Image (cartoon, rainbow, N blue to C red):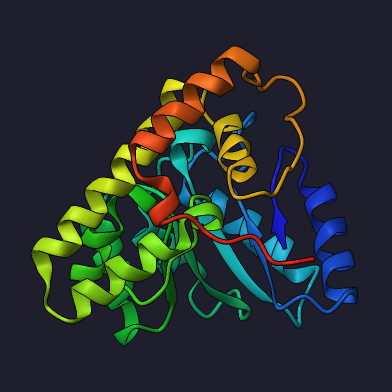
Length: 230
């Protein structure tokens, strides 16, 4: 379960509820209004929230482009190591591969590092990453399965080509308004997730028609996820 926001007490309440429901793990992002002044303060936030669910695995969700928490994650691991017993790893949504690799190698791979930038998954595989969490996997999972398979089989040119398909698909997210475009993609795999609430802007009918046309030109039907049958 994902936790995050500007109120640590609310995050703790959600952590308690999540543990009571038996979730496998909880994930926490840096407060983004009054931001932690340094990595030590961020570690204190992690410890406080993790303590509310002492029997549940805890992951930090590193996405500084949204939270403004521009800290080296290797420094966070050093701060929480052995002081936050449920700390299991980091969802790493940033482009600092040097820091990412240092985190993977910290204490002989003690922590679980999950890659979070779908558009450069291939680069994370080269470093030895074994897991990833991303939004575009919801509607294009076959593309990424093929990419991973191609890489592990040594078919590097094919893997590069598939990563470019991912980049082309993700480029349309920005072109058509950002995060709300993800739900537009979901409509194209027959899962209507509705519209976003404010402040996110949703595309109108004309924009959706133009979006659908561009998606078809990408060959989306050949690598999209298949909605479960009802």
